[in-house]
Amino acid sequence: MSAKAILINVIVIVVILVGAGAGIYYYNQASSYVKTDNAQVAGQAINLVSPAAGQLRQWTGTVGKEFTAGQKLGSVSGSGTAVDVTMPSAGTVVQSTASEGGLVSAGTVLGRAYDFNNLWITANIEETRISDIKVGQTVDVYVDAYPGTTLTGRVDTIGLATAATFSLLPTSNSSANYTKVTQVIPVVITIEGYKGLGIVPGMNASVRVHI
Image (cartoon, rainbow, N blue to C red; front, side, top):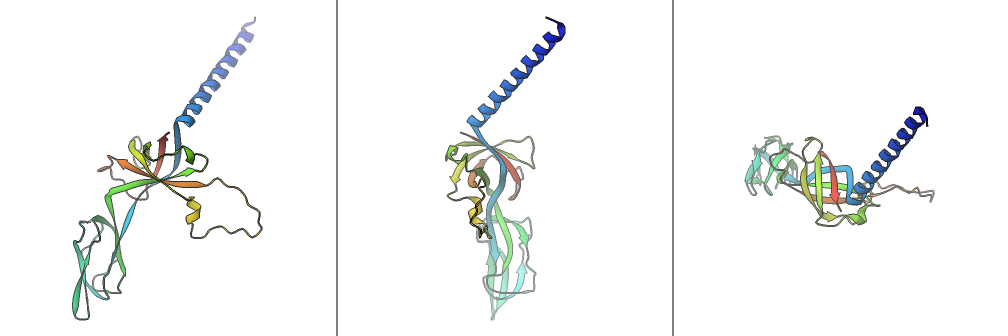
């Protein structure tokens, strides 16, 4: 056999081995994990609202300031009385739209806050893999803002409707012709040991669920 033929055989064998190795790797990944990069850090927004109509005489709810539940944020004067604006629950102010001295109505949103000690991940899992997801499964969480850092999470809840169901403007179909598109189901993932990392709601993330 010529040297050229031997070289060709060696190349063919290497290609076959590499292809087989890649196939085994991807099979193991698919059978061991469900992955998606369609995920975000989330939390419960806390609306800071005026309890009465009148003039906002005082406001200390500056962005970045942390308050405990019931702590005073400011006061509204109206009809000869002063009413305190208080923090509904513990959190850190992330947005302040209040203008001290301005007039407000009852229910006017003066700012928003989040409890940074209670954040989670919302991951959208394709419907073709949702049957593999179970509450309590371990999840590897990767936040885009912190490459190289892996957080540990757990599947907390699995949505009972697709993400598209919650759209404010659902797609209408007047022609009765339906184009099938793979839907995603929102899955809530609790995260452990993130405090001090500096993650905030809205940050992009990727997850890998151990199935």
